[in-house]
Length: 318
Ligand code: ADP
Ligand code: MG
View 1 (cartoon, rainbow, N blue to C red):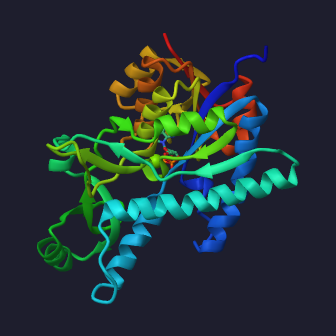
View 2: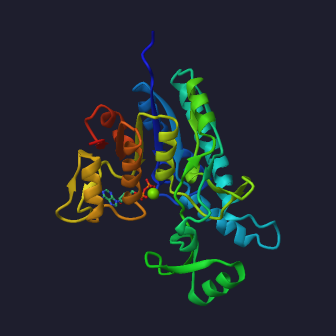
């Protein structure tokens, strides 16, 4: 009997695709994605079946800019459709990068990417009170005019010195193609799914699915996916090697390991920033409380060491 294989959901952060030192083009994104495949290979070589998820923040932002620029010349596409669009082309980019890497390394494995719908509640409070910035920054007079014309909510983005559209980031409840993902993993595929957190959808009174113009946090969607497919590990690959207390301060302390209770305590006293490390730690807590065995948060260069327990930050059940 062969030993039971383990499953990992590997969530790629923005830096797996965008290099902050370069002006972004499609070439820089492909090049950075190809480089990032070394990290994925480490996970496969450690004996895992792998689902890759990824963010789409900058990419969906550019799609929104294109929609505005093409107004009157091409049909407008709403945000939910744009998320699906980024899942499609970014899935293609990652799939091709990994296939080429497998070819070079003589690895016989197939790769497939899927566009994922993610179930949310129509009554999610974040849809009433949106806070997630998307798209361009506008001067005040223009922002309010656009808000009126387009039906947007706009708020001041302190980081960018202007007003931007805000959209909801509802809680992911279920990944609608989770069974297909499990089936493909069991058939030997590496699967790319839940890109950009997936397309938020809700069920109407007749049980029919409808898209929502919102975005889902990719780390939280990755945790829900992990639980749904019975994954052992959730690997969140981001721009820092370790999660820290007092992040960015002189007294910063990098963490090698924490339990769920410790993670909750640190989160409650504000160590993990909302919108960046906060959702990662929340995703970790949820994944572990619902049956996951281990969460690793680290960067692409330390994946292999972290899996061996010698790098990154590991979070475990109590
Ligand atoms: P991703 O694209 O991978 O989701 P984010 O920028 O959303 O990346 O989140 C990762 C970032 O969170 C890190 O690069 C770091 O700047 C920031 N961060 C905030 N709080 C912490 C913390 N307590 N420990 C480590 N990094 C933190
Ligand atoms: Mg993020």
